[in-house]
Picture 1: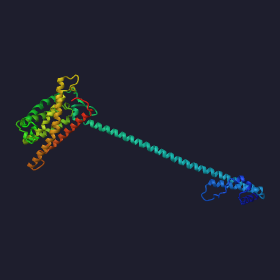
Picture 2: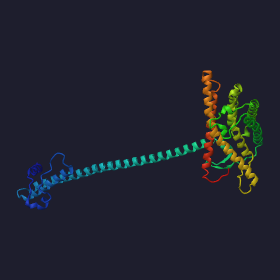
Picture 3: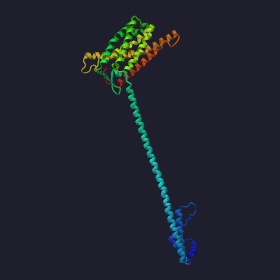
Picture 4: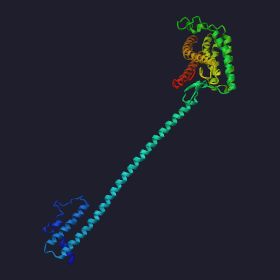
Length: 394
């Protein structure tokens, strides 16, 4: 009972600053006490300890307080100090947990950024690989689509023309080439025998003195048609029987079938025979194309060491004739002929009263042939330009 009374007295003692305990009182700066709601728990606990110690100092300063009262105040101060220590430790633990969570969040965000960067780099690498594969596939696709000029010129992987193509041993091809060189001669002769040319300057066509139909005489028409038909029929059977005699058998077969159908129009209607004669002028270029290959199986370049002068002159003459006839007939004459064919089809339309007449297929086939000629010409020029302007031989 006495101890409890002492503690009650200690609690009722005034907590005032005393001059006798300046060393402890100096810890308080006289500012207003922080008892407001929301005060920091550590500050509150340390403030209570400070007040308890201050009370002890005041009790000691007053002589009427006994040892029991002072002892009670000391026990109260000890309890408050322990409470302040626990509060500080708990506050430190919570603060450390908050700091750990912040560090974890920062580390997680850094990992997310690194992962995103890795995915980004991986995506870029995949796109680059896809683009490279697509380019390689496109190049392989283009290389598989052989051009006709690759059958007659030495073309490297970059599509540069390196010169004449050296021919490997192929007996069926040699026989086929010589058959064409022989069989095309009467076809060409009979064809030009059916034309007249009164004016030496392009037969008077530029001046308007003549037209393509007016130049056709047809005096050897039957001989010309049957010779042409026999040539294409035999050559078609040759390619079907021995497809290795040419490098592109499907193209040759398709071309010959279309040509045979084409020449059936003037056979049924001889007034259109001049169309066949004009179209067959391209066989002059075909003859030089085959001769260029047959006369130079080794792929030699004219006027180079090891090639005789006579052979060089022969190779140069055939090569120049090939290029001249190519551009003169396939590039210049065929587009002009296409205009004449369309005009003749339109005129025939007026005669029969319908556009779906026997000449309908002629402008279509002529247009297809023109497109093929232009495509081959582009390939020819592209391969020449890719050779960097260096002389690669005719």
